[in-house]
Length: 248
Image (cartoon, rainbow, N blue to C red):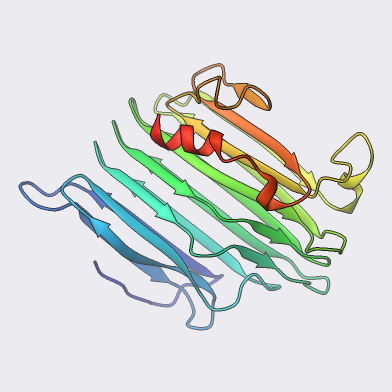
């Protein structure tokens, strides 16, 4: 595993690549580029064998603050399995009129699998965050991604979160494309109401078993399942859909 930190204007970029090595362990390549003062997610290899790796994305500095631009690129090679974990949740703090961004690019080769166990992402009062996720899957690739968006810390109004999500097959066919704009007005009756937690499990290249989440599921036209759940607190989110997506 190699790590380097050359200068990169505009923010920090974390790259994680996993591939095969003939007759040996999985090949894991990581690097973090950007200004030395820019907060980043630093990959830490936890385990690996001939076909799989487990990596923790550890925050390197306080985040998210106004002006932060956190970017992550993940590539999983043919037939490889990568598990990403986060040791703690992320808090977007009051930005006093400023903005921050968080973007993810995922590329999965044929037969590759990515399991990303995301922890809660809290949008505090005064925060303004843009989150963008882009995924490309080759034939036979599988993705299981958990996301929990928390609108405001306990007892406070939420900031603003603009999220975009797009996933495409190798032929350019769209699998999932959506955009959400959430802020204090989203807590109105008929929208989110009293629910400040929006939890999601996205399973692409596979489907979550119906008995694991009979409610809140959307089976996608070209394969996969998107499951959503509204809650008042993060600990109220059911665990069964995520467990099914990662073991089924």
